[in-house]
Amino acid sequence: MAGGDVAGVAAPGPGNQLGHQIGQHRLADKEAVPSVDVELVLAVDVSYSMDMDELAIQREGYAQAIVSKEFLQALKTGPNGKISVTYFEWAASSDQKIIIPWRVIDGPETADAVASEILKTPIRRASRTSISGAINFAMPLFDENPYRGLRRVIDISGDGPNNNGSPVTLARDTALEKGIVINGLPIMVKEPSYSTMDIDNLDYYYEDCVIGGPGSFVVTIKDREKFKEAIRTKLLLEVAGLTPERPVVPAAGREPRVNCMIGEKIWQDRWGR
Image 1: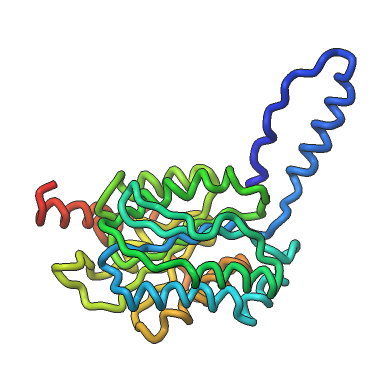
Image 2: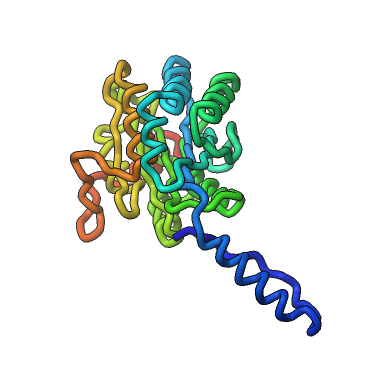
């Protein structure tokens, strides 16, 4: 999968038609062979509902997971022994910032470089929560990736429902049509409150409204002390192409347990826009 279309080439003159055809076949053969095991987009929530401590732990969690012994061992289980990864932070539908452009991780040295870059970037916060905006921003990133993978995965972490931009289910379904898998890391370490627009059962919301694709899953964070452990678990599963012991029941064929427009409804009820 995910070999990508071979870029169009201007039509050659009749004298070099055969050479052109051979070149195209070689290019197609090269494109058909994935060079990494997974193309992984890490999409990280930095909305104001996340406090500064959570944002710091989240950053450290990703950095420490990438350099962990378990992660580096998981890398070796794939046929290519390497992945490509990009990391961006998101808030409103028009607010996404790439922290790490596409990089290959194939061992301790490249893992250290990516982790260091994540940690040295200043922490920021921004308004609104647009999971749909994050998904829509992530999809074209795969086309910009010079490395082709066996799988394409968007990894969304966040602590609230979509309340800005297009409905999250529209963005999800568009990604699934492109063969992209979406996994989720719902953050539920605080009690839901009026000020933060948190909801009960955010894990159900992620399962029924956000994630999708073959083997998609949710790893929930309900304890601040387990934050980093959960991030490491999720990355290990994604790199190894595995799913958790408790598989997620596909949302298809049944009504979502949580209204997929609940974030938009809460925002409308409170601010009327």
